[in-house]
Each structure stands twice: as C-alpha cells, then as structure tokens.
Image (cartoon, rainbow, N blue to C red; front, side, top):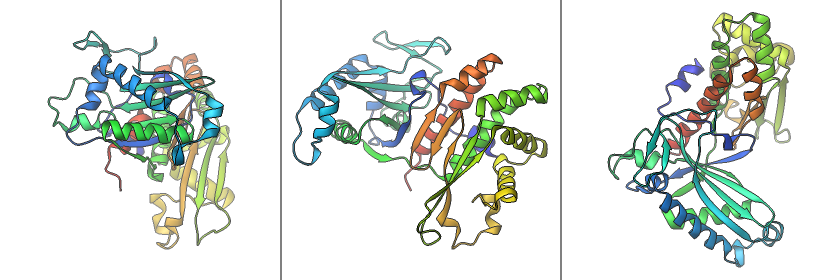
Length: 351
C-alpha cells in the first residue's frame, strides 16, 4: 500500500517551524559529484556568513539588460540584510545535541537545512536549502552523501529575485537548479500515507472521537484533475471537493476493507459523479491513448497541499488541532513523511 512506499524512503526529514504556512515552490539541486560544499555550509558558521555577505553584495548590484526588473526593485527597495542560518529546533522539537569544531550546535537527529533571509526595505523573503537527517558528517568529499545533503530548494520569492538567486548559486557553487515536478503517484500516495498515519494512531479511540479528530485535522479534501489536448482542448482542470463527513466515512471504509484510500475515493466519485480517477489500479479501464492526458495535478486538505507543478504547503493549524488530543507529534511525523517523500524525489536523477 501507499504507506509502505513512503516508509521505505531512504531519507528522513524534519518539520521545522519555518516551513509552515508558506506556499513554497520546489526546485531540485544537483551538486557537483565531488563537492563538499553542502557539508561546509551546514558545519561552518564562518562559511555561511561569507556566503551571506557575498549574496548581499551580489543582490545589491544594480542590474541592467534582460535581468533587470524595475517593478520588483520599486516594490521591494534595496536589500538591507542577508543571513544564512541553520534551521533551528523549536521548543517542541527534541534531539541530541552535536557540537562542531566551531562550537556550533547541530541537532543530531533532526533534519538539516539552511534558512536564507533576504531583508529588503519593504519586505523579507525566505529561501531554504533543505536536506535529509544527517547523524554525522560525510566520511570523505568523494562520498555520495555529501552531494545529497541539500538536494531540495524551497523558494517564496518573486520571479525576478529567483533568477538572481539562481545565478548566484550557479556561479558560486556550480550547482544545477531545476524545477521539481511531482508525479501524480507521489501526490496520491502522500495523501494515503498521511491518512494512514493519522488513523493508525487513533485506532484505539471510539469511532465518534476518531471521526471528530480526523474531520478537524483533514477537513475537506480537494482533488484536481488536469486535462490536455487532444482529450480536452478547452477544459483544463476539474476540482472534486469531498466534504469532511464523506472523507471520514471513506477513511473508515478504506481501513476496514484494507483498500487504498484513493481507490475507495475513486469508486465513490465514479458512483456519484461519473468522474474517473487515473490511478494505477484502474489501468485496466484506461486506454493507452487516453491515460497520459488525464492526471491528478493537485491534492489539498486542511493540513497540507501538494501540486504537480512543484508547489507545497503545510499548515500550522492542524498541529494545534492535534494537540487537543495529545497527537501533535503524530501530525509532525506525518508532515516529516511528506518532506521525506519530497527529498527522495529531489535526490532522484531527473527523468
């Protein structure tokens, strides 16, 4: 089932607070094969301070020609400060403490990453270099681990600023940056895994209490289907909104029958609307001519949103809802599962 795919992921992640309540755009980072720069950035505060100063100076330069964007410059103003900081543990995060040779604290069992803050006159932008949990530094610069330490870039920046940032990263680190597109299999398997993690930790509750928790945590679920020519040259997308009560009923049906949630949902949608979800289990009912032109392009619920074009968001409110039932850690683990799936996708060679 979907949860088995997620739990077998070779990487583990952590849900730092700065990731919440931001609609991120995802990018894949491909570092040079023998580069030790990701580890240097994570282990050396001096290295991060140097890169922050270099980036600030780079962004401070007035651009001309194709890279200039007067609209962005007029709105944001001039850059005032730039900082590169390790993602820090919050008071709800636990982990062993490791000190590097500069006395810098690193949470040994937490995800690794760098938060880049760009403070302009009128606004602050955030960028994150994100990587899997690292319990120790790579043994050597030739280790493949060093090139997969920071495989994921999350941005919340205007296009003009993103272009400037990408130019800096390419010139400074010789790192290749590409959009991280998410396959529909990852979208629906992530939703299934998330639901199963929540359900597995509430199975001892009464049905009424469990339903109330799931309803409060997930609320409605929206599945977006995208179409392309020649199937539908004018209709681009259809959204299927499943109310919270129906979601809870489908979850119970899925778990009691040991059938994947998306398959149960597919049967429900087809029965009530005639809509057909393009799932692997339904391949016998699809023709090879039709299947590539219909895909699940977005999954949205109260706790997270994922889209095939590489957009991602997790919501802090869901953690607060779970804390009422002392299940805050369950939501955090489920969020970490999403991040692990994104990291695994980023580490894959682009196809």
